[in-house]
Each structure stands twice: as C-alpha cells, then as structure tokens.
Image (cartoon, rainbow, N blue to C red):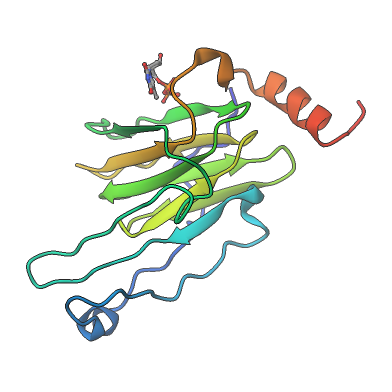
Length: 180
Ligand code: TYD
C-alpha cells in the first residue's frame, strides 16, 4: 500500500472559474477556460478540457472515445456514497488507460509514476484527468455527494491490476529499462 494519500497537501489541477467567466459563457456555445498545468509533469497524467455546451436549462458535457480520450471506451464505472474520510483506488493497471471525472462534487486524485507523485483536485464536471497505464493512483478527500466517473479502455479484469505498490514499482522499472 502506498501511503501517498493524506488529507493535507496543496491541490494541483484546475482552478475554479470566476463568476465573470461563467457569466460570459453564452448559451449553446462550446467554451473552454484557462487550466493551469500541475507543477512538474503530473506524473505523466494530464487534465483534459472537455467540451461544454452551456444552456440556461442546464449545461451539457460529452466525451467520445478516441476524440476526447486517446482510447476506445470499453467500460464506464462510478464511485458514489463515499463516506467522509474514506479513500479508494490504491492500485495501478498493467494496460488500462482511464479518464477520471468529478461528475458531481470534488475529490483528489494522487498519481505516481514511480518517479513523481502529483495531486490533482477535481471539482468541475468538464475536466477529466487522463491516467495512462502503469500509474499508481489513489482517490480521497471526497466531498459529500460527490460522484467519481471513470471511463476505461478495457473491461474489468483482475489480472490487469497491481494491488501491491512494490510490485508496481518493479514493473514500472522494467518498463522504463531501469536495472535494480
Ligand atoms: P476496485 O477497482 O478494486 O476499486 P478500489 O481499488 O477502489 O477498491 O474495485 C472494487 C471491487 O469492485 C473489485 O473487487 C471488483 C469490483 N469491480 C468490478 O466488478 N467491476 C469493475 O468494473 C470495477 C471497477 C470493480
């Protein structure tokens, strides 16, 4: 188990749009907003600015495989009703790529590629965090009522998981050609 996840730490990832930003968004227009990169290279992960169709009746965001994410979407799952203080997802995948979206509320995603650890605070349903294969990731600091939506490049398969952090590091080093 990787002990990176803690309630402390400065959030990385997108800052909140101002009320002026929101007012300037015209109904029916696709809008983007400024999105600062995390410090470092985000452990190989990046924020994807998803399309937004704003409308006084309610806004709409859509995600297409191989368009807004660099993979075919084979599976969708979501985490919800997460009790305060709980964390999820202490694992990595051998081949699976994923996009993580705060469909409601907010939470932190801590990602670790074996050489860098980055924390992303997701709090907008139009930002996704792209997480490549061989990335250890943990989720925590869930707000009440939050929903963590995950789009995945593969169907569920336990044999694609690393659940042991040290095993993940060994595999990561092999993939990077690092000799022990
Ligand atoms: P898991 O991905 O291990 O979540 P976490 O790392 O947060 O504990 O999923 C928890 C359990 O849910 C796991 O034992 C298997 C099951 N599961 C499925 O059956 N299908 C799925 O698509 C996922 C994501 C999990």
